[in-house]
Length: 147
Image (tube, rainbow, N blue to C red; front, side, top):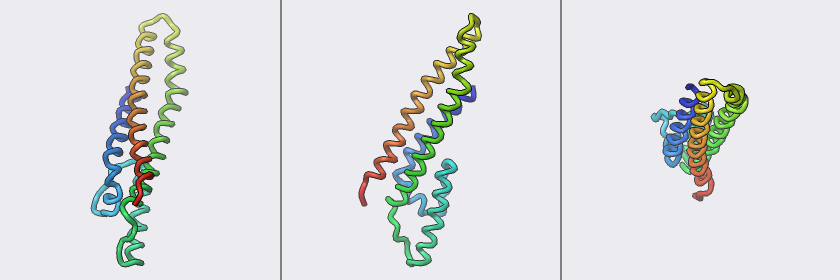
């Protein structure tokens, strides 16, 4: 089912971004590195790289610290994660659950299958939200750190 694979894809992405975030500032500053991330994170990375190039042209060196860059990436990443989960949950509420309730109310083999899939999606959603919470905690800790 595409929905389950999408859920697993989000979990993988959230975990990868959680691991990447502590070094995001250095990654952004190194223009030779290719960042594999979502659209919003790539947009902020591109904007930051342009700003750093301008900063170097004006100042003669980079003065923005890595932690400031990491904080900006963390903000974009948190926004992106929340948006993705909101889209996923909205799809479940509007498309999947009405179908499950309709099919699940009948006495058929399809009803059992629909309820089984709904249970599986619910379990995956719980796991996905756990991964998202871990990512958001890392994003928040980046903003709490000083200097």
